[in-house]
Image (cartoon, rainbow, N blue to C red):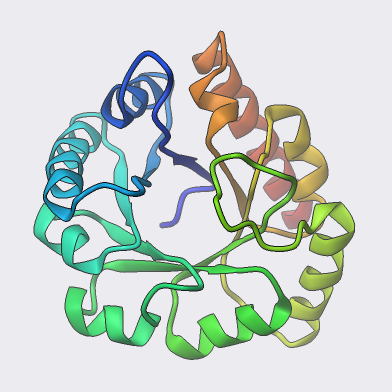
Length: 215
């Protein structure tokens, strides 16, 4: 089961990716993506192994960004691939059939591509400008999500779509009304003064949206 709230790791000013992940787990996050850029594979593997240990301790799932090899070696639950990374098909040959593979998308055409490749979920964004992304794709905003999700539904595509990119707790309810499956959050949790309260608020909004669609 793919969680509706994805925490994307980032290094805070006074800490590391691992300390940020630990705090997110303590706050109640159940799906964590380790996203480390511009570091050696050896260092990222060390991070991934420890992050996986932490996730197992808290009953959470670890996704490793960019590298199927590191995800496999660390025993992670899955890997997430950007548009400039290798294809989902090639990654599948590395990690096997059981590992979850997510893929980034910015357009409906990207979603079709990811589905054809065999992705398990889509990270669609960005919602708004975010400093965590160096090469930012065109910003979607609510109208962008509404337009793309209408195309997804019209094409009878059934894949979890996760909204991502500068999302804060106050954005969740409106974003969920576009028909996405869930949201991915980084700074909104990393820098929250009350992380546990923010995570709880987000889960309430995510679950409330699911119930409305069922009813």
